[in-house]
Amino acid sequence: MPKMKTVRGAAKRFKVKKSGKIKRGSAFRSHILTKMSKKRQRNLRNPHYVADVDVARVKSMLGMK
Image (cartoon, rainbow, N blue to C red; front, side, top):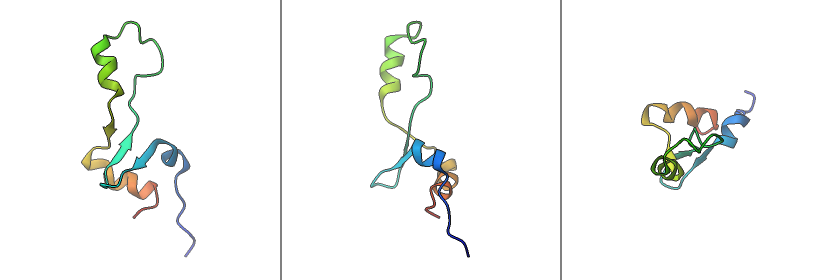
């Protein structure tokens, strides 16, 4: 059997925390932020995690399963 390879794009986008949750970046944070309310910008700064239905898929891309 060949080695399992990590999807490099996924490795750059996701981090696995000690609790097993998978941290992800949030969208809509790159440019044209002036029209967005300050409350929304503040909330986008908070950590976001991968949804439960997608965890297995992301773990397989990271070579964990």
